[in-house]
Image 1 (cartoon, one colour):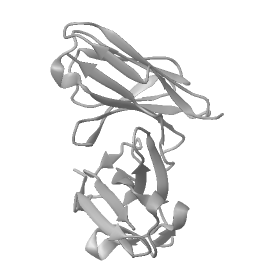
Image 2 (cartoon, chains in turn cyan, blue; image 1 turned 90 degrees about the vertical axis):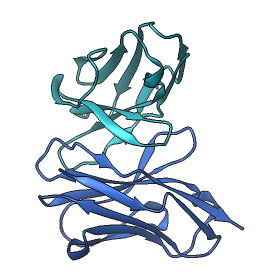
Image 3 (tube, helix red, strand yellow; image 1 turned 45 degrees about the vertical axis):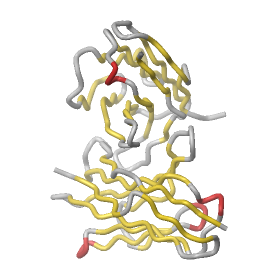
Image 4 (cartoon, rainbow over the protein chains, first blue to last red; image 1 turned 180 degrees about the horizontal axis):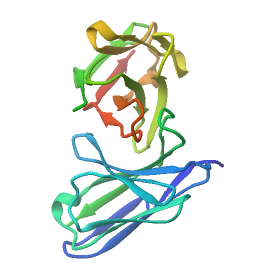
Length: 112
Length: 114
């Protein structure tokens, strides 16, 4: 199936740990994104890559580092996890400035 | 800076009734406008979008929205609600010519009761 897929779906970890979330899209899109959805369902963009190049970098702590090995993959690594990092993280992709985003099903991160 | 305001965090309608979800945007340049739907434990799915052209946009599942520049609004409607429409709905705006950076509203949870 053509899709944006994220792994893992659920991630429970302790404060101070380092974790990664992986994202892959097979839609042939050039642009990929990471969004964070907090407990109140508010969605905010974190990063965007276009053809492996970082084009959007919102005010996100340095503990968050995206990596795009190729245009079909955009991974998110988080160092020294904090309680406030608990959220659902969505990966998305799109083709072109006016084309809609295609979202993955999200990764629910719980930091204890 | 762009922003999106969705009036009403919760909307409840009866099955068969009109659905109206309100969205107002703020943008200093012509915007692209989107409505997305999120079902529980799932990602967001595009309902419809406005980029250029006709201001009345039809989307999936019988939804439509009208871009009104004078009112800076992009309200979502459906003539007859179905139980399966119960979900969270998000309005979003992005800049024309930008990097497709979507700014989302806070969302409206639609409940449909028998």
